[in-house]
Length: 551
Image 1: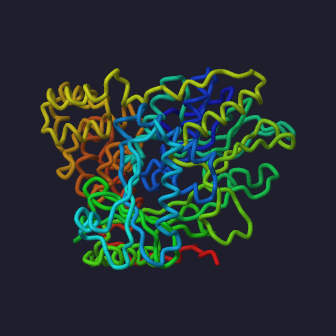
Image 2: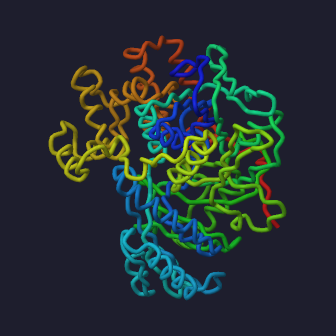
Image 3: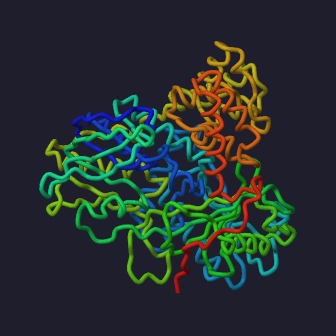
């Protein structure tokens, strides 16, 4: 079911996919005056965008592959996000320990950090510095010192709630005039001879079909780009995405106060252990994947790998599979690279691929990262304008604040909000972290109807008003949309299961759901959670994974 029912129409640009890249494209193109429609068969950012490591990388890892363009782009985009989304993107220090036997010697890493600091001058949160073994033992006492040769402290960024980046891109794109159709399946491309002239769509709930004719169609379906093209237009394989899995655990003995970025002993891959919203994320894997893109689940082997590497570097941790609260797995939308022997060597950059002259009017986006979504969108819109023959139009998104940061002085707003809020400081700060300046809207709804001031999730302190805001103003359709990608209580210890019934009850009382709809939504929510293998549902061992390790 779409929250904006489809109807036949003509637009400048049709975008397939409402992940972070598709939404960013819609925002950029609408800001430059184009008529835009986006369609996605599910919710905003419910695919790869919600399965990332939640880090806004400055691009340090890409120096190893001499991809200086991507490093510069990542540094710039990280810097812009600090300014345009300060409520969502935060400074995040990382410790990089050097151990005897690592494939990347400490001297090499220090050299890379020095080069990175030069490239990031004036656009970072501080210079990296060396950390002696004695200081490591004092400040990170749980970290193994066996074979430790030293460490470096590096400054990067985190977006704790990547889902909210997608929601705010949607809000801004809509404010700029773009139309976003969720739960609307693209059933095919419209073809005028060889020319792609738009897309056919179908509302998932009603079955209503429509044609959206567009001067240009952009395939921004992430790992599904080849699925969109299959049987529609002739094309080589474009997607070669790899599987990345993470696990979420409670604080453990020896858990670090900052992110630890270290080399895994099993495969020499750089992996993380990092604090996140009172818990820890361990990740990620990087496996070739040839399985069903709609059934991506962390395997037992991946979970065991992440736990073993964490236990190795934190000897007192003692983590077992029973400690895993849930896991998160997704497919990185990387370019297909035949015969690759090391997935880390596959480019993390993006390509704007025009299918002209064979199929004019069609563009496919290959690759892309959370950090550089805005730059990708700028490149795509530039190509769309060239295709339309409209000449250059100035990009407006470089310095355009996200809706949640639409204030002249974010720190002052945050201080005033906490001071004047009727909630506890902790609950007020949570609203700011999730909604930014739009936290005022949550309190306004609760003031208009005192029943909406009810707490529906004890762990987070989330309010009933947030359920109403999610559906009425933020495009949520299902209970899963509300819990996992708007309020975010679905990412707590029990994945929102203890709050789900209360939230469904709010929808019955305030959003027109009947009891049958509420029951169906609760069942569907539990079904959606199965892919996370949550401990709260006592999910059995995973099915065959479709993973394939590179040689």
